[in-house]
Length: 142
Image (cartoon, rainbow, N blue to C red; front, top):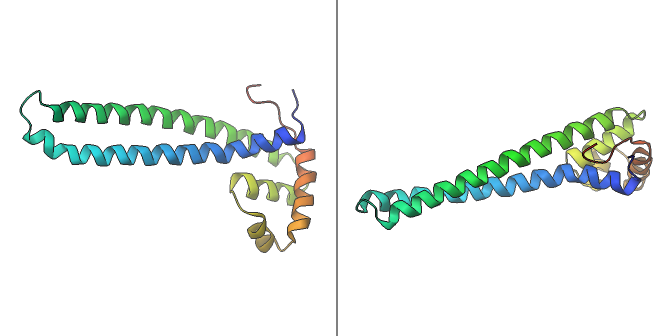
């Protein structure tokens, strides 16, 4: 099923959202690694079977869970980005392709795009609207 313009925009925005989710998961993994590092001294001093070992095991289990979620998130992100890049590349207007790439794949603001592309923000939003209208994307999962 072909998407309408609003759904296309949401599908493109999902590329950046997956990236933000991955960054949050990476930060959570770093936090758990830091906790595990601090626990190492406690585990060394704890007698066999002490609470320190259990806490360390829990931390490592949490890291494993987060790492699996991160890998799944990265796979989803890659699929979304590849689909978006393919759809964007099929656009006839190179300016529209650049606007969509910068906005959705690179996450640039309208102001930064206007400065770097030497257009007004208003002109960019018109290019954006035309590019979204022309963009051919299927519903996710098709």
